[in-house]
Structures are given as structure tokens and as C-alpha cells.
Length: 233
Figure (cartoon, rainbow, N blue to C red):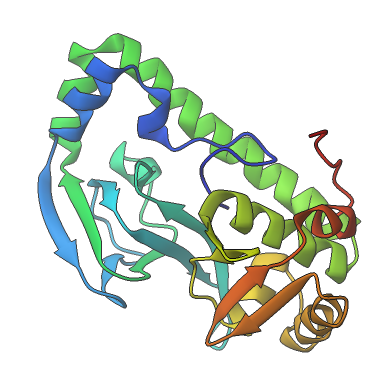
């Protein structure tokens, strides 16, 4: 799901590059601006560009059937999306939508390939990023099947808070605008179950919610609810 310094060690792709390589990579492609709700990538398309996120965040969704859509992930500035199709492996497997104002560079496949051939050391970083995402997907599938809904929801909230949390008074404000339906998609649960689990966390004064914003009031107790170790101060 999210990028940054979090419990699962994720880091935005550009943050894994040394400064000169990062500067070179950020010069690729043509920069475009997107407003909230704009689609950067359409599921099923056969386009082969890589999209490099420079500002804002996006959500990645995939359609399960006519009526159900799965929220697969959220990516932020410094990440890339569309990496599999960009190297010519099949059509787009998901839709990528802006969750606010987004600035991103669209890099054609031929430009990406030429760049990686000219910078073989970055090819390894790119491959490691792709493999890391596949490994993470496997881990998430195991977690979804191995824990009850309240624990899965708490884990999602911990990762969101660590990655996107902004201090506000005595809380961490999660700057990701998600509905309860989208929380359900992230946790692999029914909306009703997530609604109940959120209510339990609110009743225990671990979180507060309002206007599609979530505030973590007690990270230590949230980590315990997520069955994660609590860092030693």
C-alpha cells in the first residue's frame, strides 16, 4: 500500500536512488497536471508509458466484476506507477486515479528503455522495485487471510499514519481522503465490518474520524490493536 518510512520498510522509488540518479530520472518524460478524480491510467489500456509521481497522491483500483472495485494501493510523490505495462508486459492491470492535485511525468516506453540501457545501475534499482512490489502483494494476501477485520484495519491505519500522518494538536492527521468503502477494499472486508471496527477504535479513543479524515490519537494502542511491536522510545 503506502510508501515512506513505515512498519514494512517501504520507500518511494525515487528515494532509493542516489542524488545524481534521482535528478536524472526526474528529468524523464513530459510533466502533466491532474485534478482530483482525473484518471492517469485506465485498466485494460495497452499504453506503455511509465508515470512518475512528483506531487500529490493517487489510488490504484481494479475491477473485480461489474459491481465491485478493489482498492489495491495508494502511491505518493516519488513513486512510479504503470511499471509492468511500461516494460511491455500485457495491458494495464489497474486504474490509477488522482486523489487531489497531482503533478506527474509521463515517460514513453522507448525513453524509459533507452535511459535504463544508458544507466545499468538504475536498471537493478528498477527491477528491485518491481520485485519488492510483487513480494509485498504476496505478504498482504497472507495478512488478509490470517487476521480478523479489526486487526487488518488497524494495520492499514498504522501504515497510513506512518506514511501520510501530519501532526495536529495531540493527533496524527491522515491526509488520505478515503471512504469506509475504500477502507473496506484495502482491508479485504465488507463495509459493514469496517464500519463496526472503526466504531470500536473510536469508542476506545484510539482514533477519531470526520469529513473523510482520520486522526490517530494513540499510536501505541493502535499498533497493539494491529498486533505490531511497539517501538522502544
